[in-house]
Length: 254
Length: 219
Image (tube, rainbow over all chains, first blue to last red; front, side, top):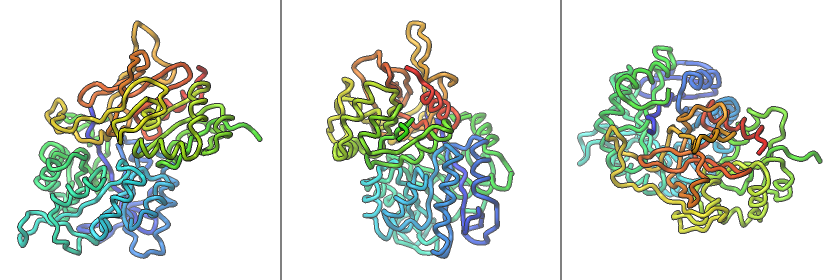
């Protein structure tokens, strides 16, 4: 039976892994290659690198990091952040990424998602959706861009369906209300999207304990769960997370 | 010029770096080249035939580079490992874009049904089939498992990402299978050829063991 995946996420800026709260207050969490190897040893199913480097001068650093990680870690690697054109996708794949995650650009230029999927295959195109609960719209969750600062007017559930129809092979759903809060995933949001699309979804944003991972699968219908801080600061290992999920009856790779 | 030990066939589709990096990792000291040169592929001792994306595009690009003959020659004569679309292309025909394959084996490439697929916990099964699934090794009539399964537990998990699977006519080809939710062929073997639907280059220790078995395989 297919296992539910656990994906540690590494936010990278200027060549280092960092972690913030609600996309702010960044703290240094260590060397990307060392952290990637540690997670691989613990049994992580995939790794996601999110390049949050603000200045374009240092953007090339992520390619170097991915090259290093890909020659030492043999599990799928996803890279996102600042992916603007098909050429960016090509560069990341050539550096050793297996999937590329597209966020703001998907909203500004949806055709780019279609073009990238057409050229490299849906299997390597992940669309990241940052959603927030709103009360000024005829729908419940709105898509935000630019790290959660800009509202788009788009319904997150309809947007997810549209992205899958353009060729996204997977969707990474981040609840902006939950990110960094440690109160758990936004399961109603994830469930609404998971039920509406055929492609796998990754739940992200808000994990504070291992029960949250279980709830993400059982209540949120997630095919994979993504977490950062609970792993970076050594609160739990990936292995402990998997053992706990297995005890709760979830199929995992142990 | 020293002959290449392992050639990874490059026909412009998808990311071959992962495959080459994993082979270099398990075979230090052996030369691994990513090649779109038919002569180089013909002279290599072993050939890996990967593939990503859509099969019709893969077939078109393979022919555009004049690689069909070199791939068929390798598949018939030397240790050959097909991966993902590199497995699917060996068959006659795919439902994906109604495309003809290389026709080395009789059979079809079919898409997973999308409606009403559920696992035994009642969870909706998504397409693509993405993630780590168990691979069961064919051990018919008390035969020993294939050399490429050596050191790999029966039912070990490998990483998959695909929406189509092969349906060989010749059941003796089947070297391994997985379930999603129905059983499908995930590995085939014949003489010097082995081909898998999953990605050994992304399947951690089990995958590296398979690649190591391949580079040492003497069929």
